[in-house]
Every structure is written in C-alpha cells, then in structure tokens.
Length: 131
Image (cartoon, rainbow, N blue to C red; front, side, top):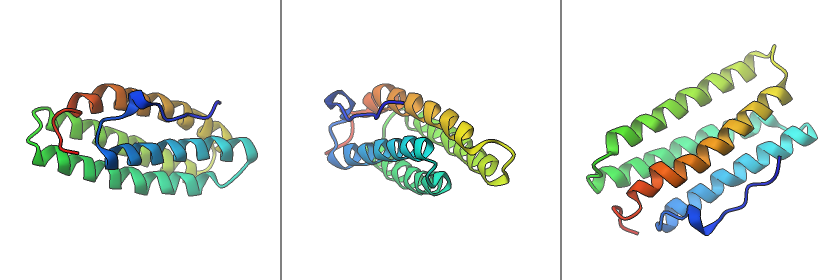
C-alpha cells in the first residue's frame, strides 16, 4: 500500500486538530511499514488506540464547547471506531489470525475510515469551532 500523504484538503482549519490528524496518518503509515517489514504491529495498534482516544476526547471537547448541532452523531462515530479497534486488538492479541493479514485488513479499513471521516464528518464542523 502507498504511503498516505497529508493534503491541504484534509485541513479542518484548526491547527491542533490538523496536527492530530497528521499524527494519525503517520501511525497508519507506520502500520503499513510494520506489515511490510514484519515489524512491531502490536506496538502500532497500542499507539493507535492511545492516540485515537486522546484525539477523540479533544475533538469532542471542542465540539461540545461549540455546541455543535451534530455532536451526538459525531461522538457516536468515534465510539463505533473505538469498539472496532478494541475488537481488532483483541483478535490480534489472541492470535490464530495471521498478524500480517490482520494488519493488512486493518490498514485498508483505517485508510478508508480516516479519510472519509475527515472529509465528511470533520469537515462538517470545520467552520463551527474556533482555531
């Protein structure tokens, strides 16, 4: 899989959120590299779990403070993602599934989810929160 590159069209016009989104892209790219080279996939999953939670809480706090009208739906999307990631980490930890195969599947999902989430759900709040 190709490396994901940050594009200006991903910007939600909030410097901290943009930096966090860029960090998430780095983590996805790190997972890609770990999968290709047989690296520490579990470590990347742990980092992704920690960082996603940190990012989601920060973003949700901003949306709540701004009284964003679609806050509940946005928060629900985050919860679904966190539950998915928990299930993936559990599957990875239990073994039985080829780690590279699981990582490839996760990588494809992450790429699709992150870009569509930023370009759709996050862009919807772009003009609502303060930079």
